[in-house]
Length: 193
Image (cartoon, rainbow, N blue to C red; front, side, top):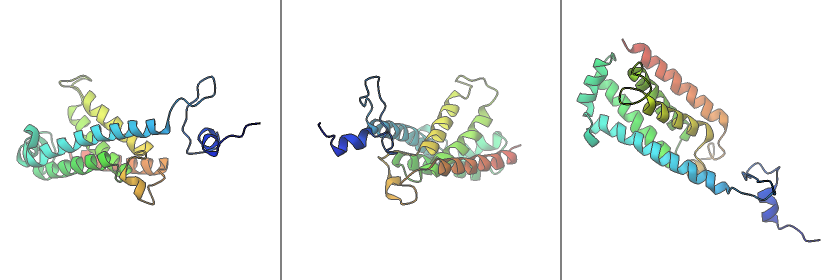
């Protein structure tokens, strides 16, 4: 009777919590665990760098942005107090949260930072319908992506793998971070006129 190699048994064992292989009807593995990690890396890079670019528009006026003064005027017109201060807070949150997502560093907090910022963006664009140019489909998509990353974790190809506490991502970390992000967004929205 042929024996199974340890690597084959470990990769296909239903009791192995790290094995993430999907099975087709024949019982053979159809999805590599690296596929999930590569997909999360792609999502983190695109979403994170997009948010970091948005933040740099607010902070530095890059990519056609208004800089602190132009963004501050927008915040003031949108009902937020201290427009320039809000521009700095939003810009820093987007840059740091976006870069955190891109490299997979403190992923639950980075995702929650993006979610908090985007909840405020949705509040500003609310009422214009769902679809662009006046709707909020774009903001909603960024919010959902950031929340999903906060909940799932960054995958193996991330800086969090080198942090002892976050090496093994837990759903509770992501959920707690999202609660903090949403509470912070709520406080900022209460300041809005």
